[in-house]
Length: 501
Ligand code: NAD
Image (cartoon, rainbow, N blue to C red; front, side, top):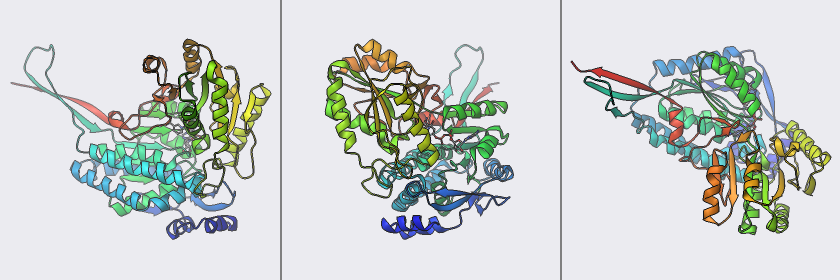
């Protein structure tokens, strides 16, 4: 660990538990055993506010992946997980949730140091969300079943019923913006359904997954049921997409990579869930509570420094209230504290990497060059920090309006009538989420079906819960995480016909 990171941990009094973990030699968790990469390759893990090195993670080879897939296959085909009584699976998932909860503060520190995010939101959102997701799906383990069917037309006498069977070995490829929580979304439902899993965390943020693997072991989940393989997307992610031993691939990440994963997955006809990018529109209507809307809009785009797939990044404001709303929005944005993630009051944390900072800064430059009016922010700072940035009076052909930036950058424009606002909102290849700010129930209800998005938030943004499905329309992907809907993507439906003599 570099001394600058040591000093950072000391300054914020990071717990002994997190320090122990961050200083240890990191190993992958395959078939219930801890191991380095078979060829010994490692990658540095960088802390985003100091740019110092925290530790190193193993870079798996395809042979390591094969071993993990083989372990998951054996655990599925002949291990105890699928055949275990659902109540026993439920109990183990609750035990795992309890262990995550008992170690919440330490895991939040690890997530914050690794990804750069606010330690407070890591604890309250990422870790708490992980606990809630495991508890929610633990309850589903005993409630997955088929139905008996009365054949509608076929002459003769039959007993006909369906069975819901676990899809098999699930590969989970996870991005870096909510590393633990996104992994939990994929793991909890898969395990409840009786599947076994191979997880590949993002190479920038693998540490919380490795800490989680310690808790998987402590909870007594049998070897091979959960395997964590650290490695690059280019090598290990791509190999997972092609792997004949993986029955279902659940991918969260960018749309271009999702398209590659989808193409490769189709060669073996894998079941696919693709949770991809977004450029979510927000409509602020003239009757909205402007102060409340400004607070929610700022939170909806600047939370996690804008590194949120469903961030409300395009805001359309009814012209009569446009100037008043923009004043409120700028005032709220000014109050957001930019600080290192371990600062308990941090709201704007550093971006995950220098590469991401450069990408976001280049979009800000593009916005200025294309003639957008810079209403707030716009500067990149030391470390991986970028100020929250608001562009006003943008046009729909600008790159900052069309492309996903994945940083703290908001574009806004006024609108005159609702038809024009809906057209602007839907004028995007993405369809992950949309938001409406209004208290006019009639207008809100008429707008909801017209917005092409997997989630519609009214008078809030990113209200997520394990009981509600999450996923995209259009190029934001297909399939759903969370809610009972997710279980449909982790089970095969078998139709059984018994002909009566
Ligand atoms: P990314 O697509 O670069 O990487 C995501 C994961 O895919 C990482 O684990 C990476 O190692 C792996 N990967 C990279 N190249 C691969 C390849 N060729 N084959 C297989 N796997 C590969 O995305 P990111 O930069 O980590 O995350 C940001 C993106 O994720 C944004 O576009 C964001 O909108 C999206 N995202 C979507 C959701 C959602 O639920 N829809 C949630 C979070 C993030």
